Length: 235
Image (cartoon, rainbow, N blue to C red):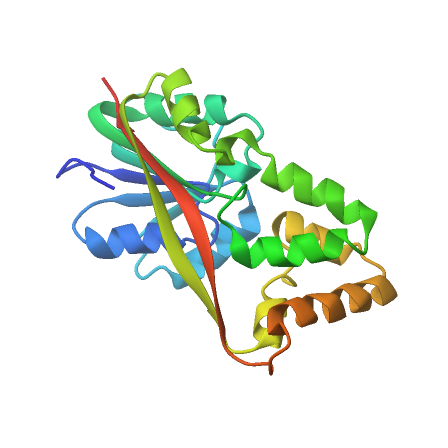
């Protein structure tokens, strides 16, 4: 992200504050705020903040409470898959960004680049027809297709849009480490497993374990995950 050198920064949909803390560490002399609709996330993030810095507040991405042009840069990290009205959120992000400031967002390339999740979902679909609905709702999201998020940036009035594909590796010690990453009860994956019958969950776990091990011994695996990183300017 390329923010102007001075001015406040905002992390929209900050969750437990991963990006907010990273921004505060990178720019220690700047005022950084993270906001999220989920009060439990904000409460947890506040317990990790030192001396009230960075600052965390509850807030709706589609109705930000901040005044026009307050921030030099506004970012959203891996949240747009869960925002039902992305253009509304991006217009709000643009509104609270000053002229010449930067609006930036990262979203998983769930359609083609989220290998660590695709392996689980595609295996579950072969066993449970209900998994197909959850998988398709997640992977067919228009913000995740090539050019999708950038198109919403353009519709929201953000200019000089730049898109990059970023790929990382998700490292797991063994299958249990991989499996537990889906058991936290958060997001579409968490909701699916929370409502699953125990016998069906056990069948899916066994099949996913087979896919994870692929005929070899259980152990460390490194699975790729790609995301679309988009940023633009406010005029």
